Image 1 (tube, rainbow, N blue to C red):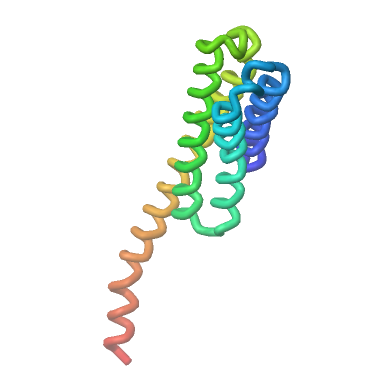
Image 2: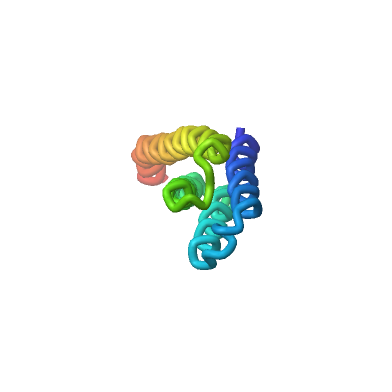
Length: 137
């Protein structure tokens, strides 16, 4: 399942890169272009970094960063349509990838929070048993 999130994020990034590559106006607006490229690139990088930290809590936190970058990049693509850097119909695939990636990452983030909560509950239930055992020794 984790691979799919990266694939959706990478699909979004590839679509954004293609839009920028084919738009002389977007290429000419350096601050806009750099911010769009940076935000769209950050999505899969944040997912990977969180996953590699090997902690459900950290992973959930980095998924939050990835969702923020995705929202930023998606908003910038919409701005590009409004600025007439891109045609709306040319952005539909990028928007589709963004929606699918957002749903997948949100569900994964919720599952990681649930995992952390369940692990805490199990530890708290186990602690009284451990302290009783220590009292007997």
